[in-house]
Image (cartoon, rainbow, N blue to C red):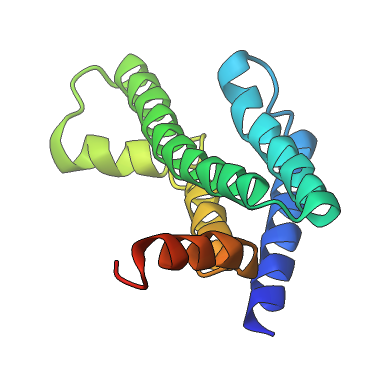
Length: 148
């Protein structure tokens, strides 16, 4: 039941985030396409997962969720850097806490890419001890005599 709820949260989150990014015009350059492409790719991987039930597909989904985490961190850094650059163009003498604050609250929402981190974590929780991996665990236990 919890696994199904995690999947529902992931699907709602990815669809909602993808639609919001499209509505905001978040596709002006290749960096901006990254979250949209990752969202689309994750949905394709999940579609394959439901067709194939192969542990390799679930492993690919886990790798994709790891990339969600990385892209979220990079997105935060890029949003912050762009806001910081804009603030310094407007107010060259700005510095310290004021510059940090203005960069965090600038035109580009600096923490918005954190949604990719959240989606990545939900996706990883969905895969934790997933039944698709049970054949792999059974084969490992058989090969090692039950020892890990």
